[in-house]
Structure formats: structure tokens, C-alpha cells
Image (cartoon, rainbow, N blue to C red; front, top):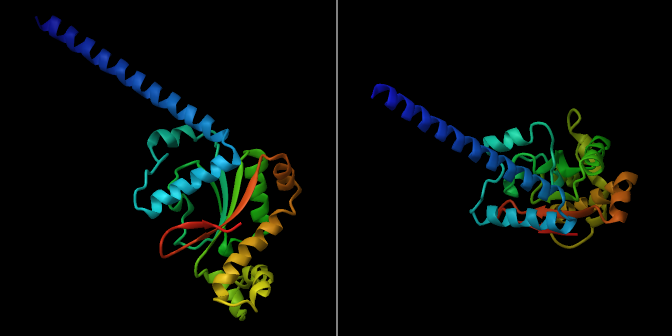
Length: 230
């Protein structure tokens, strides 16, 4: 009887183990299929995916996708982000959270004032040309400190003034326009940085072939919403 019980328990454990392996395999194949689907998104589909995620975030109904242990293992050896975002380093604009995405979904380049420095452009070229992201968004935000500093154009310590210099051309474009100068400059800066990115031959090649779309966005700190401005 004891031998029978032990054998029955052993078979039960074996069955549970087999079911666990099947479940894990199913999760893995599903994750692989989702990764392949993301890597084949068109530029417009990638943009819509970002906007859908932002809508969930702004409405306080996030899905928190791609944040599991399985996802960590899945992207450990390779990444297939469906979008590249050049955004401000401001702590209130965490891109993955704002767009309700997860690990490996967004190639995130963050720098004060969302400026297209040579290092930022190189990072973006890597994401677009080598990883094949079909969408590039330049994301500015309301009440940006870097843009405000550029509007004031005062002496700043250390290397802080370097990003001010990169934003000044955008400020010049709107300094005589009606409305709030900082907010106008935030939008103008997004347009200006996109112009700098369009000087990249690698990005231009992808744009002309239809494999890449570049858009500008403005994040509203008060509502959590992203508005497309280009």
C-alpha cells in the first residue's frame, strides 16, 4: 500500500511538472509571437500603439504590459522595440509609464530639453537603422525647465548651459508670437529638434523608404495626455 501511494504521488508530481512545462512553453511561444508582431508593426501602427497606451495611462486604467519575469528572460538576449522616443530627462515624464509600455518596448533616449545632440542622434540612429524601430517621436512637455532656462537665457553653472544653447534657436522663432512664451517654445523646440534629426542620412533613408515615421508630441503634466503636434 505504501509503495502504491508513493507511486501515485510520483505520477501526480510528474503530471503537474509536465503541465507546468507545457504552460511555460505556451507562455514562451506566445511571448515570441508578440515580439515578432511588434517588430513588424508599420509606423502608423506603432504610433497608434503608443497613443493607445497613453490613453490608458491618462484614464488611470494601465495594463502594465511586458513587465513580467517571462518578459525579462525573453528580451535578455535581443531587443525588438517598436518605437524610439527622444524625450526630456524630467522625472515627471517617464516614457514607459506615460505610454503604458514595458521592458523592451521603447528605445528611450532621455536628455534635458529633448535635444538632438550628436550622442542622442547616434543613439537614435542605432535604434532605427540597426534595431529597425518604425517610429521616432520627439516628446516635449509642459513647463519644461530646460526650455524655461533657454527663454531666460541667463548664465548657468557647469555644463548646464549646453542644453540652453541647443534650444535657443527654437526660442528665437517664437519670441514675438502671442501667448505663453515658454509653452510656445516647448512646441517650437520639438519642431526644431526634428529638423536636426532629419539631417541624418541614416534617418532620411528610412524616411524616404517609408520604413520610418517621425512625429512630435507634447506631454501635459496636468492631465498625463500626449498630443501630437506634427
